[in-house]
Length: 313
Image (cartoon, rainbow, N blue to C red):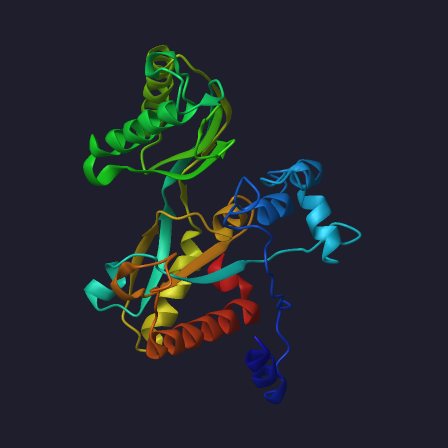
């Protein structure tokens, strides 16, 4: 960004648009759920009050956490946005396997994310007879297996996961009385997700009957699939080829803040290769050449976009 600004200043060029860098709050949803909170508030998809009210596992609200580090702010940001560009590692192996340097994302998968709580009865794991136990963790284990089995019905058309369990009281000698799990299904097909959600609800009913527990779906959010801005993608594609970078089309299965912004503004999402498709792992790696290619691509695309916004409209 600073390099582009210096280049334009040196050439005496005045861009048609200002450049702004943004670091969104809580993209991943690791501490606070849901994910994409900052960008969702910016677009109006989530109210500021609802965002502030989100709480972590220790009961601390997002508002409290931001205030404690001096990042709460005093007012909403008001910007007239002409366009938004985001660059990210692919988190997959397509670019690397096809020998491509840049992926221009054209569309995104949908995602159905639910928070499910099982309620059982706390008791001693030693003397309590097996038949008398109301084990919330056992119920959750059945649910985890069911979530995986659902994806296996659909081959490459669905991914599923239970990425987080919260167990209470989480003590070695105590039958868990409460377990919450975060369930997600991802697919391009919203119909598949709807059917998966319905089957999950039926499965949960069966699980609580055989484990003598109860359950509640505390939240369930569907993120619709989306096409990204065609004109912006075409501009990025042409810039990549002008730079001599092997450029192809990509689809994102992961959620990104670009997906939030896409509901309201022209958005371009770019990928650079991930070694072996590994991400969210300490072994995640993108080599120096791929990162330099990404910087060249981003700088050139920003120059074209801020000099002539009509080029991607």
